[in-house]
Length: 127
Image (cartoon, rainbow, N blue to C red; front, side, top):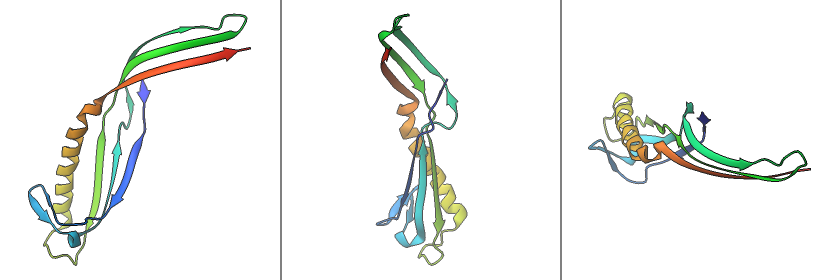
C-alpha cells in the first residue's frame, strides 16, 4: 500500500468576468476563491517489482531498484463566498453548485494522474 498525502492549496481573486457552468460571474459577485487539490486522501494500492543486492555479512556496497505504479485518487475542493454587494443576484447555494461543477470538471481533467509511475534507486554502504 502507498499513502501519498501531498496537496496544493491556493487562493485567488477573479481578475475579470467569467462563465461558470454557462452562467456569468462578475468579479464583484464573490470574494476570494480558496481551493485544494489533493492527490490522495487515503491509502492506495501500489504495484511494483524490484531487485536488489544485499551488502552481505562483511558490509560493503549494496544497491536496489524498484519500478512500479501507484494508484492515486485526485480530489479537488473549491470554496468561495458570495459578495452581497455584487451586481448579480447570486446566492451562496447557487455559487456552491457552480463550484461543484468546476470541481467535477477539474477532477475529470486530473484522471490522467490516477496511475502514477514510480522509479526508485537505492545505494547503501554498510561498515
